[in-house]
Image 1 (cartoon, rainbow, N blue to C red):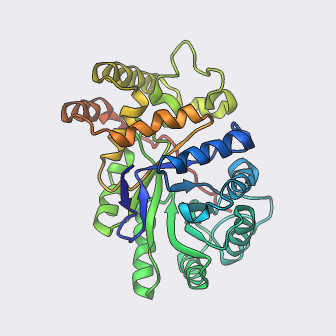
Image 2 (cartoon, rainbow, N blue to C red):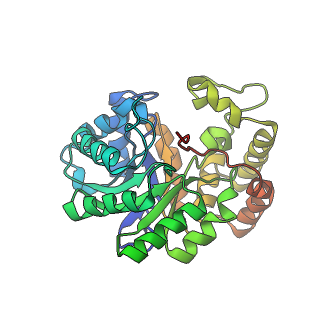
Image 3 (cartoon, rainbow, N blue to C red):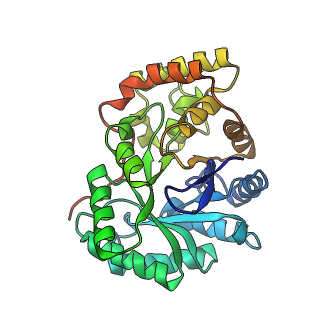
Length: 326
């Protein structure tokens, strides 16, 4: 397994990380725990979750699975998206973040979070309040590093500027949808991150499975897929993404590897990418994806992937999660 610095921080994370959105939902307790055990055994040290995944079940399962193994992983979670109907059950106010951190620590059965991430930009809370709250969490020892997620480039740059002005700890990373099917971060976010030393953590690296070849015009929701479990995912399956999938599959056959492995290896080679988080509902899925951290793409293959995915640098992101203004 390769290990890389998370942005300009001293923290080392595995090039392939484990995403846990499916734990407690499409993967039950036993399956989820077996996947975590396999990930650690194979050298993955970065595990990413959030307080809202599977209605908090993901954090609970991870907490149980890491009993006796907590020191072996870099544990990341998030807060900021909607947790309930109340006005203070969302966003990145001091009130909400402190409440959510304490609850996440209990579910995860740990005294500290290695990387605490703001799940999305909060237009109703001053950034200074959010950043001072995160600073207090670091000083308390309950959080070690802080990251952002779903921030636009100008929002992230503003946050970094405030941190520098006030002498606060900076965001060391940001999560964004990034893949062959979504190259929109390359326009503004990635150049900014390269300039400021912020690590990119792509989510949806396989576009929810579109880049594995599992979807087609004839079968848009195969059994066990994200589209079959979440009908709203169908909005990502378009003629354009299916055409890209077909071309990736064809190229992968020539290159002698699976389309998913090839797509992940391409992403690992992109500037500013620190770790690529992939989900799994079965151990075999993780085994297959682990191969991406063991190969180096041929330059000609990487160039062709750049070419066929170039149209996805423009237009709308494949996915972005934002808070509605109240």
